[in-house]
Image (cartoon, rainbow, N blue to C red):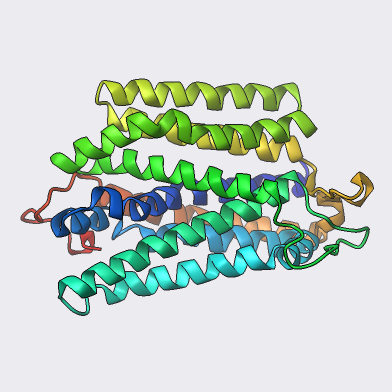
Length: 338
């Protein structure tokens, strides 16, 4: 495998990891008004993601950083063409982070309600913006031969961006519900499992449609097989939820995302930004990449640093692996509080 392909695969892996891990954070936040009817339930929901959400955001920083470092031509085309979605993502992540921190600085019902709503709104905006950007990118942007966007600020935000936004939002909501059913006990666990069981087949459709469209346009038999794996994983997740096996359902729902993302990136390869104006204007990894020497240095650096980061995050998940109940249990790590 040449270094350009290796780093394309690395970028795909980083985006998949971000959606897989941050997806349940977004989903739990989105479900606060739905499942968190009482203060104790909202606190419990936020405690499930309290030790994890900021670490999960590192995957987004790393994914964008990898695009910038390995494929500056991709970055230079991508961000200006999708300036508005990325501004919304940044806005959503900033207000969400502020809300997590400020929510505990004062203790009244009004304060709690206000900042809980900000957490939900910021998460929804960020998830929709990321989905819109990825959807528009994989299905094509109106770029010319120089990689510049043709048209106004909204020219890249058509039906493909809407499909991506809905796909990421729908996936995240069910992902969050399954995560809550895995991480909590009592009435909240039951309510989250019922919601996931009811909506998982419907919520999977936008993501499967998105991956299916990209496969039909650019794919191979291998990406077709991956799409079938994604569809099968939805059925497995639903079946495991029916019998109360939340851990297996969570793994299957995550496998659906991984297979769908592999379909998207695998079918698009070697194109990183397809043009809706003329296929000859497509930006490929060869067009966008830095030199082999730079990629070699980056590979060595990633080989040293990445295991450390993965090990630390795996340790964090292991420490906070137990189910939570409405009241903190004796000996529960302090970081379990949102």
